[in-house]
Length: 231
Image 1: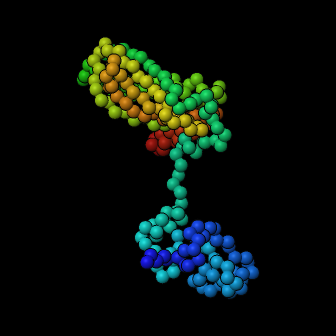
Image 2: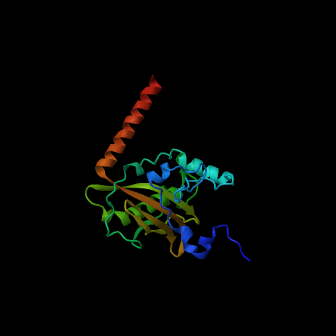
Image 3: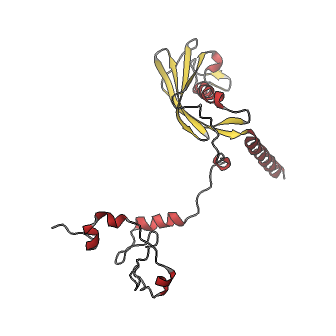
């Protein structure tokens, strides 16, 4: 015979356990609720406090940590997210699946160089990153209003194969997620039918006035830091 830890009324009606429990009226609560009990003398059930253990059971470390996380002060938001607007910024014309492409021929100035010395005569990772940013920008740019501007928030790349000088590279970007304030693109680089690299690029849309305030704030912070160093 299968037993249940719920009282018999819940076994007769399985959905009863999931029904919201009404809070007692002030009169019922003042009528003398039993300490540690969830039932008043009038028969009303008291709601269990959040993360409180059931009677006769101790809180597990997991529940204790969950309660601590719930009561903790939330972490500070990123600077871009701090300026989000409730109104939708990205136009509805920008849809998932829209693509853009950049085509370039590998030249010597696109090769990896350190201290002005070219170390490999091939397409560099930073050139690939630059062209992936350009392709992703071409996805977003036609959908920006005059008072809006896009700003890069993330770029990750896996560089999979080299491309020598003189080869023609196609860099493609495809919108895979459109949010109310930005777009996420999957970006790929090709040498013919050979995949050179792939990655993900994120852009956020801000009003130009907000972006200008952010830049001015960063400039003031930089000037203050330089003054402090000289002092």
